[in-house]
Length: 234
Image 1 (tube, rainbow, N blue to C red):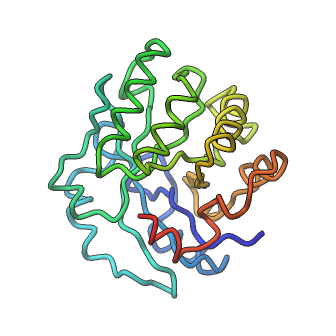
Image 2: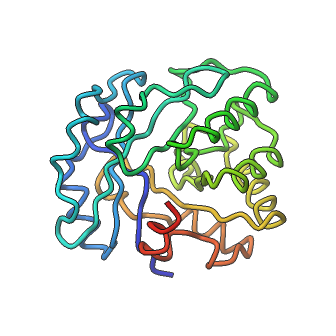
């Protein structure tokens, strides 16, 4: 299956990624992606982009090399109330916001605390996607989170990087499989993200697509299939 978009991609502005904006876009164009979201880490992540980075994304053209560019961010969830480290003014300038749990930004708690945290983040109308759910250190009630996805329209990401053998989120495949099963039961769509930190990873969904195919997850419920339909969903 040929997919049209990648919604999770980092540049050197994230501090621990290794490719420029133009390098990522070049690969996206070569792979014939129609849409690419640039989602660098927000300021609470050590080495993350300064707030000025997100304010100034408006200077990036909407289309480069034939690829529609979404100006986005991977915000950090910073407390158990689901708060994120970008304010309303910044987010009004962005096309897409991913909210994620990262160990440098929020200590590990209980399953109940993690569940409440994720659901509260999903209730933020500016948050479009929950990034890489599946880290077993941030265990959560899968049924509750999938129900919140259905209710709020906040997508859950199948993160390709988390499924690689080199992932620093061990055990993610187990939780992701359970999440996919619950999404099937509740008829909730999913989105894949490469979480590219190097340009060669842009648009690479090898592990994520294989898992979804193995689990017979319907292609029409994977929102990477159509850039047009994804934009309508947003």
